Structures are given as structure tokens and as C-alpha cells.
Length: 103
Image 1 (cartoon, rainbow, N blue to C red):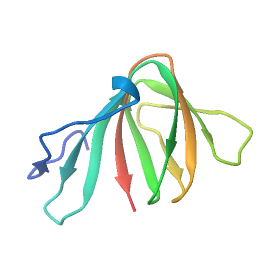
Image 2 (cartoon, rainbow, N blue to C red):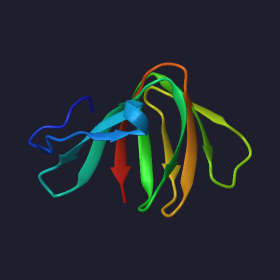
Image 3 (cartoon, rainbow, N blue to C red):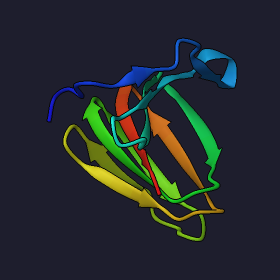
């Protein structure tokens, strides 16, 4: 799907790594929370609490999950899963647009 209908949007942005990653939280009708954002060209490490599915909706990135030695490339329309209480490294050479699904 290319858009979410009937959602609430938290007005204040989530800004990480000095603005290299900016997202907004959206809340669906059923209470499900997601973030919609962009990571600017950079190399970053994110820590997770809950499990996440990162869905790429524009651009591309390279990802290395905690405990893995290989980098994997993901682009528009592709997703990767991140376990809860873990971390991942992400490297972007272009803006990477994503939706983060929690749980």
C-alpha cells in the first residue's frame, strides 16, 4: 500500500543522530503504531526494544544485524526483520525512506 488512511500523526518528529534520521509516529485506527521516516546518507547503529520490520519505500541501504558478519542490501519494496532487544547497523548512500512496523 502506498498510503495509510484514517491515522493520527504525532506532530513532533523523532530526530536521531543530529538529523541524519527523522521520522514521525503514526497511529492506525486499531491502535497500531508505526514510524514513517527517512535516513540521510550516513552509517548509523540503532538499538531495538521491540522487534521491528523495516520496510523500504524509497532508496536503498545496506544492513548488518547484530551477530551477523555479512552486510545485506535492501531497496524499495524490500523489508528486513530486526529482533527485539538487539541492534543493527545501516549504511545509506542516498536517502532511504522507510516504514518501521513494531511488534
